[in-house]
Length: 300
Image 1: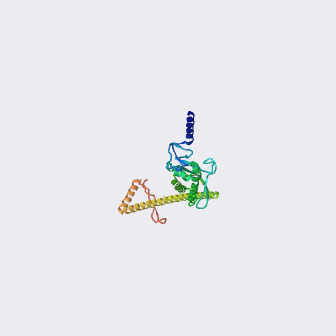
Image 2 (image 1 turned 90 degrees about the horizontal axis):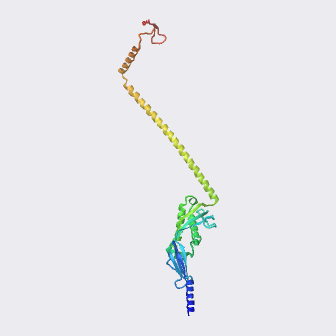
Image 3 (image 1 turned 30 degrees about the vertical axis):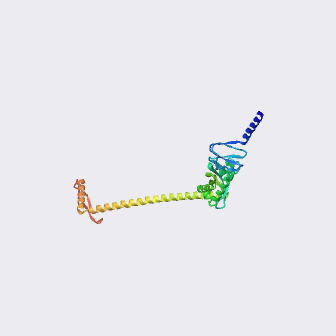
């Protein structure tokens, strides 16, 4: 009897071990429990949160997804992303094939993980990103690029990237996948002929800007010289006008009385300096034909 009891107990323990499974849902994760038999077959609508989750491995399974932000890169270089060439090629409005390296951040909402699993059937985020997310990103780059010229892809591409990110979000967000920080790593790679044309255009623009700056400098120098000459001319006119007005005032102030007074002042000054000597010869007015008068010298 005891032997039978022990065999039965052992069978129950063995059955419990093989029919009970458990897994741990860590911080920053959420899990889904999938029932594969019975009336409740399918994914349970309530995600499994942090902690231990028990299940019957024969009739159900648990899949755990991270709910933190993950970054994915698809590049041509084996040193970034996967070892292979995962870069994305799309066409722009002019039909040019442009190859780019892409980076994007992804986060799965915990409350929508059941819906995410039903839609994509991916058991890990990497598989989902390298298939569904990459394909959606390529389709959106093609959609937005088909409306964008090469200048707004090679140069100021902020609007192009923003519109592409909105396109990806519109597809992914209803299923609980939040995307952000879409970026093009490095420079886009258009055909070589386009690169040459763009470089020539940039060089031509730089030369044009240099010539424009030189023209502005020459114009500024000419304006400076003109202003200086105009200022000097105005100064000369002002000086001449002042002198003319001064002379006019002086001329108006001269009267016969003043002239007579000046003449007497000159005569007095001459007499003051006279030593009493008189000239020996006096030439009368009229030139050489006038007679010469010899005067005696009284100073001796």
